[in-house]
Image (cartoon, rainbow, N blue to C red):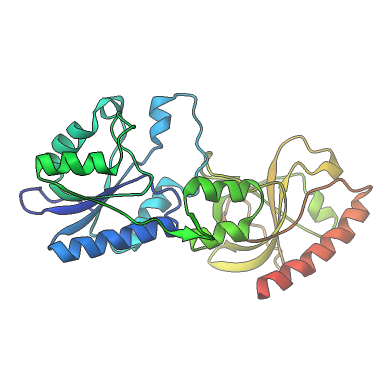
Length: 303
């Protein structure tokens, strides 16, 4: 999505990090498209490839709902005309709202209408609100309108709210706000093969993106995709206490599947939380529980 010269096009735009491109973002972009169409403008989403706090705080490690590439792909699928990746810099952080609106949005990108999300701020003067942006817009000739929030269970949907649900293991609640099942991908790496010895071979996942939010420790039902095929899966996240594990791992047992997929890409869609991770008295006792977990996986996948 390249941006034509501003003198050739005028835009209705909105700005955001758009982590996960959840239902709140989709609702915002639907409002943007409607506003653009009503004014004879092109629609533009301005987003940041990297989290702004990574620039402001060098030790900040975000926990993301989507990789940068997946985010751009999902934004394009919303049907907006253009998506502009704005690299956040210290110079950009130092700009006040008026300068940002005038010098960057209006003069560089050709923005004539700005849709402001219900909780969004820009410029270093973060104490400003949508009424302040509307006042600046009136002075510089840019229409500024507020967006309606998307509510789930009466509360606005946000990326931070979805992350909190994932941290608690509530992957079904997260999916209800995302509009899709929470998904992580990675390369299958070698493990200790304890699962295979018990009759439950597992694929150990090495996430591509070190900043992805990992759900709470525990056992989940999931759908796992590899080599163009999708299988029911039992996923364990945690430290494998029965085997005195020291490192946190993500292991997936693909039900009915037993092929060598080391170094293949594996994608996991979380369906439901089954149980917390716990230490068993023996591998045999764990195997009995895993057999029950596998049956529960097949039941939850059917629902």
